[in-house]
Amino acid sequence: MGVKLHSYINFDGNAKAAVEFYKSIFGGEVYMDTFRSFKDKSDMSVDDADLDKVMHAFLKGDNGIELMVSDRPTGMPMSTGSQMSLTLSGDDEDTMRGFWSKLSADGQVTAPLEKAPWGDTFGMLTDKFGIAWMVNIGPDQLQL
Image: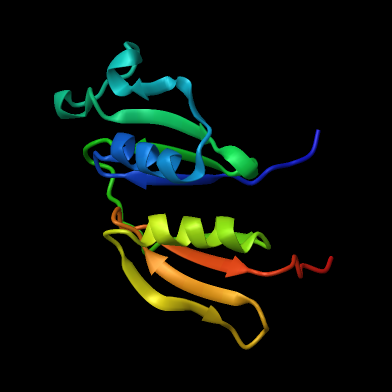
């Protein structure tokens, strides 16, 4: 079995809405008991305000895209969006532009999706949940 690096995004109470938004873009299914909430783990001591928050959800999207999400319980500090960015790379221009269009809806484009100095089409945005995304349309150029 190979090794995978998964993106794990923490939210402040809106993880369920976020994973449904990403599912509407990337397709696929949400796993791990669909949404495991903190109240489902009776052996954990959590604040009453956190009982309905998402402890863990896993989106296995189409095209191999996988995201994990959770809500931060009360008392765990967090900085929304700025601590990371997610990168989508691919050579199917229609698919990639479709992702761009849906992710940028109600978000903020920080660099328009256009021809980049390295020859690919590239853009950056922050989606409506405050998550930073980079989209690169072009052939796989990673050289190991």
